[in-house]
Amino acid sequence: MNKIIFYHNVYIEQYSTVVGPIESEGPLKDGFDLCVSDLYNGCDNYEHAEISLLEDAYDCLLSKVKDKRFDICVGGDLMNQLGVSSYFVRQLQIPFIGCYAACSNSTLAINLASLYLNNQNNQRALVFTSSHYANAEKQFRFPNEYGIQKKDTVTSTVTGAGCISLCNDKQTIQIVCGMFGEVYDALETDANDMGSAMVMACYRTIVQFFADGAITYQDVDHIFTGDLSSIGKALLIQMLEVDYQDIASKLEDCGTIIYDIDNQKVFAGGSGCACSMCTLNAYIMPSMLEGKYQRVLVVATGALLNPIMIQQKESIPCIAHAILLEKCI
Amino acid sequence: MNIEFFEKVKQQYPFPNHKIKNCIIAFISGGIIGGIGQGFLYLYLDIMKMNLETSQTLMIMTMIGLAALLTGLGIFDKIGQICGAGTFIPITGFANAVVSSAMEGRSEGPIFGIGSNMFKLAGSVITYGITSAILVALVRFWLFV
Image (cartoon, rainbow over all chains, first blue to last red; front, side):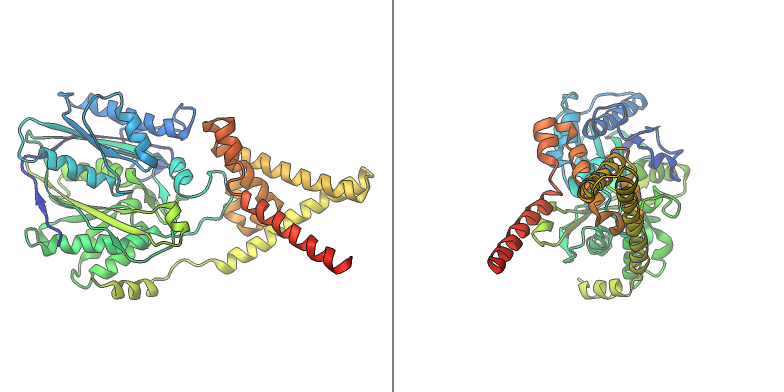
């Protein structure tokens, strides 16, 4: 049985977001710190472009914080061997924890950093994640210019990078607790419909989070899931409605917030590490600061898919990590 | 925990299904591509007065060249999203598979990038094309010698 881990003295100090061209035309365009106009961002290739997105987000974060010292950095991306993260941190000279949980990297990294900061004094952590549409296509699907017809169930990887600085000094938003999800395989094999594959993992994390007893469903103002797509979100709402009748008005999916899925060509919604991270930084936390939500549960979901295993007719194991944010002033 | 319930919910969900629409668009767009090819064939045969064999080869080369050009310009994948099998099945699809893979490998250099990536998708077509050609040739050889 999973247990909620309570964090003491862990606060979110500042955050920054850099996104690509499609995201900057979406509904959250005013919330992003920087929008780049093309996928290359002035670099020779997409890999370096993703690194430059992270660098831009980091520079942006540094311009917002007074104390530019970090004791640890935690982050991840979708590339093989965490290519982007490793090459980004080589200039920072900060101890680094690289993590991979596919699209749920954001909450996994925040949970890991919170564990590090838990019960400490005057410690600071940097959390970052990034993803890039073209890199993810190359890594998990087909070449970018390949003229294959995509299904309506496919999600589009968000191009972007997000950084968050966590600290022990009291700030407006506190990370109250978190939960590491367990890997669950619903025996889904369709790599073109990862939204429905992740539903069960997300469902289990949410149910176990409330079953723990420390936090009740009524304590939470809103639940944000990672990148379940419009299909996964609809399935999850149907499943949770049995226990929680008003879940439809209380649950939203980051992949459907970051894009205008009716008018933008993004198929079923957004996905990728940057999806939950950018929505967290550009929408969820600003809404909390405005006073729209007091307590928010963020459950980022990840399809731990490996292209080789998929070709070996394996199913897609999925995971979902949760964090609970609270506005404490 | 409730996997049966999930299966039930998923079965009831109205998944978007455009099979018939996609088939019709593929039929029409595939026909248009065939028509364009036929147009080039007539151009080479009747207007340029070439013989049939040369005209056919030139026509195929023209279609491959056009598909490669459109892939390089970033237009082909957008057409492919609409037309589906209509652009995928003719020789244009093969040209697109080769060129798009080569473009993807560009950042890793000419040998390990372009050279080795070029046939990543099209390689299986070539492999099984050659294998089946040999098999058919052998059968024909045994039957008619």
